Image (cartoon, rainbow, N blue to C red; front, side, top):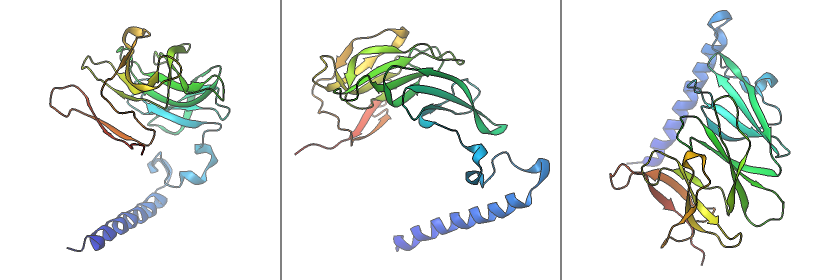
Length: 231
Protein backbone atom coordinates (compact mmCIF):
# COMPACT_ATOMS: atom_id res chain seq x y z
CA UNK A 1 0.00 0.00 0.00
CA UNK A 2 1.26 3.46 -0.87
CA UNK A 3 1.17 5.12 2.57
CA UNK A 4 2.87 8.26 1.30
CA UNK A 5 -0.02 8.95 -1.04
CA UNK A 6 -2.55 8.22 1.71
CA UNK A 7 -0.99 10.68 4.15
CA UNK A 8 -0.82 13.39 1.52
CA UNK A 9 -4.54 13.18 0.85
CA UNK A 10 -5.51 13.81 4.50
CA UNK A 11 -3.96 17.29 4.94
CA UNK A 12 -5.47 18.40 1.63
CA UNK A 13 -8.91 17.31 2.82
CA UNK A 14 -8.48 19.28 6.05
CA UNK A 15 -7.33 22.39 4.23
CA UNK A 16 -10.29 22.25 1.86
CA UNK A 17 -12.61 21.86 4.82
CA UNK A 18 -11.22 24.99 6.44
CA UNK A 19 -11.64 26.92 3.23
CA UNK A 20 -15.30 25.94 3.04
CA UNK A 21 -15.77 26.89 6.69
CA UNK A 22 -14.19 30.28 6.05
CA UNK A 23 -16.71 31.03 3.33
CA UNK A 24 -19.60 30.05 5.58
CA UNK A 25 -18.39 32.21 8.48
CA UNK A 26 -17.90 35.24 6.25
CA UNK A 27 -21.46 34.91 4.96
CA UNK A 28 -22.89 34.96 8.51
CA UNK A 29 -23.69 38.42 9.87
CA UNK A 30 -25.38 40.05 12.83
CA UNK A 31 -26.43 38.04 15.86
CA UNK A 32 -25.77 34.73 14.10
CA UNK A 33 -22.00 35.33 13.80
CA UNK A 34 -19.96 33.03 16.11
CA UNK A 35 -17.97 34.48 19.00
CA UNK A 36 -14.66 33.20 17.64
CA UNK A 37 -13.85 34.89 14.34
CA UNK A 38 -11.75 32.65 12.08
CA UNK A 39 -9.68 35.72 11.13
CA UNK A 40 -8.99 36.69 14.75
CA UNK A 41 -5.22 36.86 14.14
CA UNK A 42 -5.64 40.06 12.13
CA UNK A 43 -7.32 41.93 14.97
CA UNK A 44 -5.36 43.61 17.75
CA UNK A 45 -8.32 43.37 20.13
CA UNK A 46 -7.78 39.62 20.48
CA UNK A 47 -4.19 39.92 21.75
CA UNK A 48 -2.96 40.11 25.36
CA UNK A 49 -0.25 42.70 25.89
CA UNK A 50 2.90 41.79 27.83
CA UNK A 51 1.85 38.17 28.36
CA UNK A 52 4.00 35.06 27.83
CA UNK A 53 1.79 31.97 28.42
CA UNK A 54 3.33 29.44 30.82
CA UNK A 55 0.45 27.19 31.92
CA UNK A 56 -3.24 26.55 31.32
CA UNK A 57 -6.07 25.42 33.58
CA UNK A 58 -9.59 26.16 34.79
CA UNK A 59 -8.69 28.59 37.58
CA UNK A 60 -12.19 29.82 38.50
CA UNK A 61 -13.95 26.47 37.95
CA UNK A 62 -16.28 27.67 35.18
CA UNK A 63 -15.31 24.78 32.85
CA UNK A 64 -13.37 27.13 30.56
CA UNK A 65 -9.58 26.97 30.31
CA UNK A 66 -7.73 30.06 31.59
CA UNK A 67 -4.17 31.27 31.00
CA UNK A 68 -1.33 31.67 33.49
CA UNK A 69 1.27 33.99 32.00
CA UNK A 70 4.26 36.09 33.01
CA UNK A 71 5.24 39.56 31.92
CA UNK A 72 8.21 40.20 29.63
CA UNK A 73 10.38 41.27 32.54
CA UNK A 74 9.69 37.93 34.21
CA UNK A 75 8.83 39.07 37.72
CA UNK A 76 5.02 38.95 37.57
CA UNK A 77 2.41 36.20 37.16
CA UNK A 78 -0.91 37.16 35.57
CA UNK A 79 -4.09 35.10 35.50
CA UNK A 80 -6.15 35.73 32.36
CA UNK A 81 -9.71 34.40 32.56
CA UNK A 82 -11.62 33.20 29.50
CA UNK A 83 -15.31 32.51 29.03
CA UNK A 84 -17.58 31.18 26.29
CA UNK A 85 -19.19 34.56 25.61
CA UNK A 86 -16.19 36.64 24.60
CA UNK A 87 -13.12 36.06 22.38
CA UNK A 88 -10.93 38.14 24.67
CA UNK A 89 -9.28 37.31 28.01
CA UNK A 90 -9.59 39.51 31.07
CA UNK A 91 -7.09 39.79 33.89
CA UNK A 92 -8.34 38.27 37.14
CA UNK A 93 -5.24 38.68 39.28
CA UNK A 94 -1.52 39.45 39.17
CA UNK A 95 1.28 38.98 41.67
CA UNK A 96 4.99 39.83 41.71
CA UNK A 97 7.96 37.81 42.93
CA UNK A 98 11.59 38.65 43.66
CA UNK A 99 13.42 36.96 40.81
CA UNK A 100 12.88 35.86 37.21
CA UNK A 101 10.16 33.32 36.37
CA UNK A 102 11.11 30.73 33.75
CA UNK A 103 8.25 28.22 33.73
CA UNK A 104 5.12 27.11 35.57
CA UNK A 105 2.80 24.15 36.17
CA UNK A 106 -0.88 24.49 37.09
CA UNK A 107 -2.40 21.71 39.22
CA UNK A 108 -4.33 21.07 42.45
CA UNK A 109 -1.34 20.24 44.66
CA UNK A 110 -3.09 20.28 48.06
CA UNK A 111 -6.29 18.44 47.15
CA UNK A 112 -8.77 21.23 47.88
CA UNK A 113 -10.25 21.14 44.34
CA UNK A 114 -8.75 24.58 43.62
CA UNK A 115 -6.02 25.18 41.07
CA UNK A 116 -2.56 26.11 42.37
CA UNK A 117 0.55 27.18 40.47
CA UNK A 118 4.11 25.85 40.75
CA UNK A 119 6.71 28.27 39.37
CA UNK A 120 10.32 27.72 38.38
CA UNK A 121 12.40 30.84 38.93
CA UNK A 122 15.86 32.21 39.66
CA UNK A 123 16.75 34.69 42.38
CA UNK A 124 20.10 35.35 40.67
CA UNK A 125 20.68 35.08 36.94
CA UNK A 126 23.93 33.08 37.28
CA UNK A 127 22.82 30.67 40.01
CA UNK A 128 23.07 26.89 39.58
CA UNK A 129 19.67 25.34 39.00
CA UNK A 130 16.26 26.91 39.57
CA UNK A 131 14.25 27.73 42.65
CA UNK A 132 10.77 26.29 42.96
CA UNK A 133 7.74 27.70 44.72
CA UNK A 134 3.98 27.28 45.05
CA UNK A 135 1.21 29.84 44.71
CA UNK A 136 -1.81 28.34 46.49
CA UNK A 137 -5.02 29.31 44.68
CA UNK A 138 -8.58 29.89 45.89
CA UNK A 139 -10.33 30.42 42.49
CA UNK A 140 -10.13 34.20 42.96
CA UNK A 141 -6.48 34.94 43.67
CA UNK A 142 -3.10 33.35 44.39
CA UNK A 143 -1.56 33.53 47.84
CA UNK A 144 1.98 34.78 48.44
CA UNK A 145 4.69 32.55 46.96
CA UNK A 146 5.73 29.67 49.23
CA UNK A 147 9.35 28.82 48.30
CA UNK A 148 10.56 25.23 48.42
CA UNK A 149 13.85 24.44 50.16
CA UNK A 150 15.63 22.82 47.23
CA UNK A 151 16.67 23.44 43.64
CA UNK A 152 15.40 22.00 40.37
CA UNK A 153 17.59 21.24 37.35
CA UNK A 154 14.68 21.87 34.95
CA UNK A 155 10.90 22.00 34.99
CA UNK A 156 9.55 18.88 36.77
CA UNK A 157 6.50 16.95 35.70
CA UNK A 158 3.29 16.28 37.61
CA UNK A 159 1.74 12.94 38.50
CA UNK A 160 -0.01 11.10 41.33
CA UNK A 161 2.83 8.71 42.14
CA UNK A 162 1.30 6.92 45.14
CA UNK A 163 -2.42 6.93 44.35
CA UNK A 164 -3.45 9.26 47.20
CA UNK A 165 -5.24 11.69 44.82
CA UNK A 166 -2.62 14.39 45.41
CA UNK A 167 -0.37 15.70 42.64
CA UNK A 168 3.37 15.27 43.13
CA UNK A 169 6.38 16.77 41.34
CA UNK A 170 8.89 14.45 39.68
CA UNK A 171 12.22 15.71 38.38
CA UNK A 172 15.92 16.30 38.94
CA UNK A 173 16.10 17.89 42.40
CA UNK A 174 18.94 19.02 44.66
CA UNK A 175 18.70 19.11 48.44
CA UNK A 176 22.30 20.31 48.92
CA UNK A 177 22.23 23.05 46.24
CA UNK A 178 24.91 21.16 44.27
CA UNK A 179 23.97 17.63 43.20
CA UNK A 180 20.77 16.87 41.29
CA UNK A 181 19.11 13.44 41.58
CA UNK A 182 15.81 11.94 40.40
CA UNK A 183 13.33 12.67 43.16
CA UNK A 184 9.65 13.16 43.98
CA UNK A 185 8.17 16.05 45.98
CA UNK A 186 4.93 15.65 47.96
CA UNK A 187 2.97 18.85 48.62
CA UNK A 188 -0.34 17.81 50.19
CA UNK A 189 -1.82 19.83 53.07
CA UNK A 190 0.12 22.94 51.99
CA UNK A 191 3.29 21.62 53.64
CA UNK A 192 6.91 21.82 52.55
CA UNK A 193 7.49 18.12 52.33
CA UNK A 194 10.77 16.26 52.34
CA UNK A 195 12.14 15.05 49.03
CA UNK A 196 12.01 11.34 48.26
CA UNK A 197 15.12 10.39 46.29
CA UNK A 198 14.35 7.67 43.73
CA UNK A 199 17.04 4.94 43.79
CA UNK A 200 18.17 2.91 40.77
CA UNK A 201 16.87 5.48 38.28
CA UNK A 202 19.06 7.11 35.65
CA UNK A 203 19.20 10.89 35.59
CA UNK A 204 16.48 12.65 33.62
CA UNK A 205 17.69 14.93 30.86
CA UNK A 206 16.01 18.10 29.58
CA UNK A 207 15.62 16.42 26.18
CA UNK A 208 13.53 13.57 27.60
CA UNK A 209 9.88 13.01 26.72
CA UNK A 210 7.50 11.82 29.40
CA UNK A 211 3.97 10.57 29.87
CA UNK A 212 1.89 9.50 32.89
CA UNK A 213 0.03 6.23 32.44
CA UNK A 214 -1.18 3.34 34.61
CA UNK A 215 1.21 0.74 33.20
CA UNK A 216 0.34 -2.20 35.48
CA UNK A 217 -3.41 -1.59 36.07
CA UNK A 218 -3.05 -0.80 39.80
CA UNK A 219 -4.91 2.54 39.53
CA UNK A 220 -1.68 4.38 40.37
CA UNK A 221 0.06 6.58 37.81
CA UNK A 222 3.17 5.00 36.36
CA UNK A 223 5.77 6.92 34.39
CA UNK A 224 6.89 6.26 30.84
CA UNK A 225 10.10 8.12 30.04
CA UNK A 226 12.04 8.24 26.79
CA UNK A 227 15.31 9.91 27.68
CA UNK A 228 18.75 10.60 26.24
CA UNK A 229 21.84 9.05 27.81
CA UNK A 230 25.14 10.91 27.63
CA UNK A 231 27.99 9.01 25.95
